[in-house]
Image (tube, rainbow, N blue to C red; front, side, top):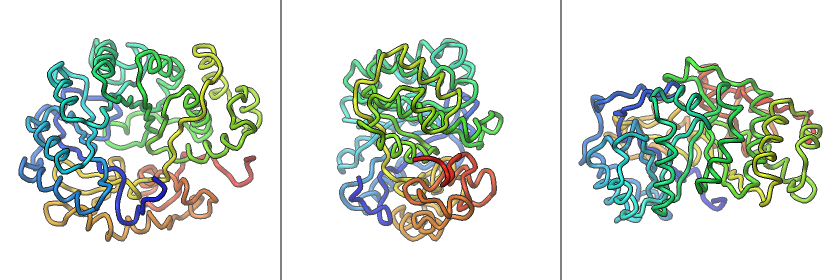
Length: 381
């Protein structure tokens, strides 16, 4: 992905194809509902939007159809089919509800969907269902993951970092390995939508969590983050360890990088469950950020830098997405790393760049510093 010019094209286009959803998860950025929201793009508008993605040129960006619950759109498979006929890769992010049937999974396979992402926010019913708000949803989610993996679909599990579930992360990794999940995408919470009511971790705890995720990526598990770009700095540090970091014991890592008890607890439990790491790191650090390689289209066609950054840039009903992506001044500033505060003077200014969504949530300025980052130039590397 390093050869791609993010000034002219994104890697990922997220489309909130609907806000309709049968769940009401406490951390969701969207105010989901059981019926489509007013102004949702019509089928014809959806087709035209998909057509416009070809203007980015090949290789086309991956279209991630999300929601709400993407399966609440009755035309979802027709839209996927249209994209695939154009050569546009598609990923789907359905909710685990009665809509995710065996027939739906078979159709997903038939259409050649690139990935399917499912949310798992705990390793126990108490934690996962406490977040998702549906009794029995934990076992339903595990069953859905097994069905998707058995069907031969590349499955990604999405997990949100929050104070009430971080202690279950080692067991979540164990579940992913047992089920056969290939990708773990970890969301570092931003206080938007219903997520405003949930307490985030502090910067030092986020640093511990990022180092734990690097450890998890050494179990032949692709690990990437959303709104946690400081993970790239951590991965760069850890790859610089002697032997590529493959044999570093948790206590040595904690001492070298001045980590806290959270890291040590998580890392040692992970080794207790899965043994010593057995692969090179599979951490993915592409250098994207909100508005750089990533762009988000809401249910009504409004364009945002990302799903957690509610700064409108225009609407695809009026202007094609490639024009908005390439020409909007805010996106140009984000891609040029024109940041203020600590992010503006950081030596990882471009490689990381901080979470623009979190900067906006805390200061009202999407170009200000990310308050969740613990990094200082005085820290050891």
